[in-house]
Image (tube, rainbow, N blue to C red; front, side):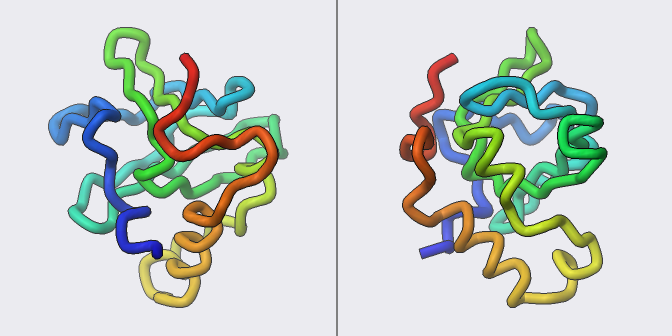
Length: 127
């Protein structure tokens, strides 16, 4: 059930020309960091978020389907996941993401699973 996890949802406001690098990222319960890298590739869209000191400078990979809304004026990306859900996600490994289909499937499964307490269905972020 992970076939759509790597695609932006139509209501997110995703625009292929927009460079999201440096945009603040908001979880459903607060700020989690800034976009370090992103991809708009069809079927492989994602954000790499630098969490700064929040979780000791860890980078996390968020599939595009976690994006509930992009605010170009505020330069913010709102994601439909709690801080804990993101903090507990499988650690981001750039080499594995690019070369290991099992790693990519694990990430997709993690974010497409039923969710954790406080997480609503993707797209239900209250901003």
